Amino acid sequence: MYMNKKPSKLIGFIGLGIMGKPMVKNLLKHNYSINFFARKKTVIKEIKKLGGTYCSSIEEVADTAKIIITNLPNSNDVKNIILGRDGLIKKLNQGTIIIDMSTISPKITKSIHDKLKRKKIYLIDAPVSGGEIGAINGSLSIMVGGEKHIFNKIKSILQILGNKITYIGKSGSGQITKICNQILVAQTMIGVSEILLIAKKNGCNQKLVQKALLGGFAYSKILEIHGERMIINNYKPGFKASLHFKDLDIAKKLVSMNKLSLSGTKLAYTLMDKVIKNKLNNKDSSIINKIIKDMNK
Image (cartoon, rainbow, N blue to C red; front, side):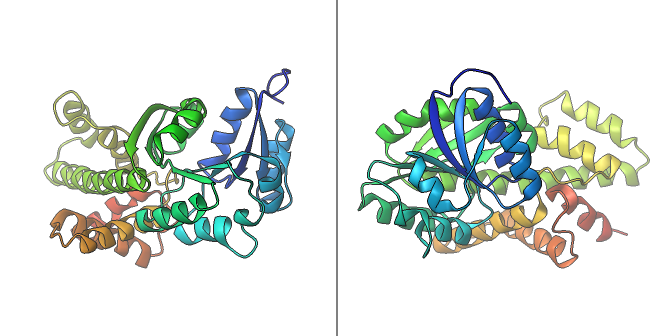
């Protein structure tokens, strides 16, 4: 168990996956009491051992916490957990704050936000970037949408989970920012894949090419971290391809809704779609590199 001090505050937490579990661990380390709902027995056992309190249903989480964090795979999961037949909304009290750290459709976020607000319950969208490493280290970038005065109430919690907290604006704007992030990451991975392929085809040491580029204006975390994955062919998931494809699908719909023509976003979606069709969905999203290499055999 982390620390011996009495927890100063209580947070409900739903969704203890690759990102959610280390978030919970960091909150426990900072003396927060966590009432959590999870399905995996190994996760339940691990978090209970560290001092978390297991709730057998999401209703129990709603009954006990005035601040609830959700970190779930997709829009439907978030909608069902909050607004579904057995959702949080059935038990939530006025003034409850839900911090949704999932990456979901901005349109659905706004819809959930508006329905909750009519009951004087608040939804803050706070998707993150930084992957599993960022979640473990508490160094995530967090993009926030929702009422500013509600954000101010929960900012100290977010500062435990990340070191770059940016309030963007109205409900859904955090999600729009995250989709921009996912578009940029995908297109940068394509660029890194292409330059590594060119280097190899021309007899250059990929590692040395990467080193040289990291020292100049082309530096990026994608080149540093995913470039390494691509060079050594290590696609153990930090962020699953299936989730990145889900985000790019949201991006595709956002582009269409805004009547834009964005060729880079379209290419990223097409290549990640091939990742899914090749049944590589449980690999790290940097596996897009394999698709590009296979296209050039």
